[in-house]
Length: 412
Image (cartoon, rainbow, N blue to C red):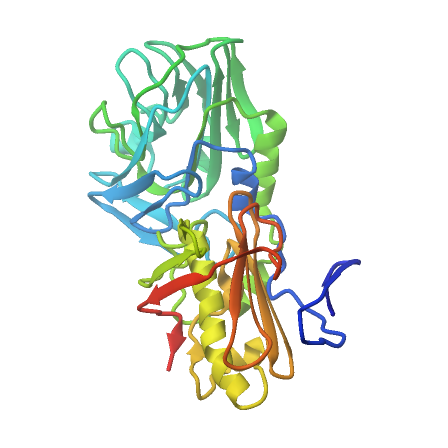
């Protein structure tokens, strides 16, 4: 019998044939709410963090791809973490196109963080922020030649807000625009607060392609500067939701731990979902009856647990399971190249007792499965998963089939 402690609560269960004495599991990374969690909790249609030149939405199955003079940076972005990434657009032909089309009915919201390197008045052309362009049925958010932010929701009229000009350059700002065609309400939010609103309405049922930094229909509107954390909703966010999302982006909770835990080989990009630890490995799992499809972030979690298992086998063979610090430092069986604490999507727990060990991967956000791997003795081990995201255990569904090729999380 052993206990898993989460704050002041403890849950106990038995493993057949083995006794664990007073085993305390310590989280490797605090699962504090972060920006990605705050956004995904509001159920967007699509959410692109834009920390790489290509990638996947943090929800759903759509993807994005940079075009022309668009590059990616893993630091210097808008969020209060040292590894906040963003896309850099050159104002000439750099922009980002997605595979998200339509998905908007009676209401919509658009979000994007923007940091301008120049003003539209200086470049003498409109800077497109984000939207789904369509002739006669606009859903476009852009900064025009007078440096005013305008939100177009149908042909013609728009809702406008003109920020102080001196605040536009070289500063990150979170822009959100919402439309509800049933109530005709339109709102522009600037850094989490209502900046402008009206009853100008708009047409329902947008069908255009979602893009960032340039329009797919109206040419020449290339934004010059940084863009990050772009999202689309099929509803109008409330003022409280927008304020909460902005506050999450400016929170420094956990930032120091993330910075100190960063390890060589960590890459922000398309492979791992929010924040995106990438991998070249091919990861497949299944029950004894059927394959279990994995999202990119789930593949990373399975790869971490598989890597831990692989090195632990050598530790067990030497009569003592290894701690996380030992796995990162390296053993005869290899070493972890990447610290699990840098994964923005999962909290990892590893506990050892003699030759026995167990590891959890518990998601920080909705929509991801939880995983659990353990071994009582060399050379046997098991992996289980819980599709609803709650902490997995030996009584969760067993992944009897598992295949990993080209594991780039281990150095031998």
